[in-house]
Length: 113
Picture 1 (tube, rainbow, N blue to C red):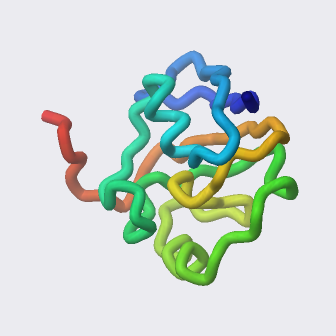
Picture 2: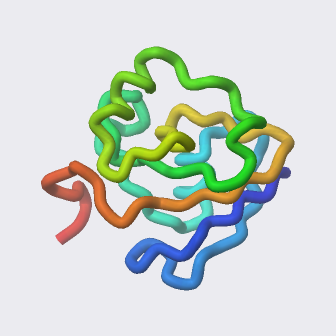
Picture 3: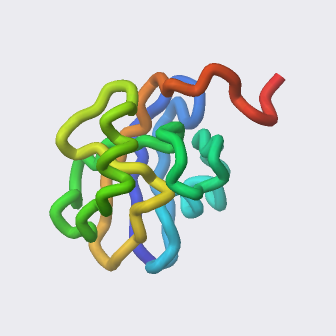
């Protein structure tokens, strides 16, 4: 299991979180399995940017982003050099520190009232 530290997010995890993630699973899957309800409007098919995260530590240990992910990231709110789509980042053996941006470009959150 690999440790992912999630920095505080006002809505999704106000106190931050430390989760154990299974290698090979996506960061998005790991967050959802741990009760952190990150948006994923395209159901993790790399067709939107709602699961955008910023990898604050451990970015260099990840596989490089594919061209499709890079193209979508250009549309993400708050894009930074360490930005990734959490549905496309496979957890490896190295721990990660991630930040979930405050906003997404999603106009409506599915499953939210």
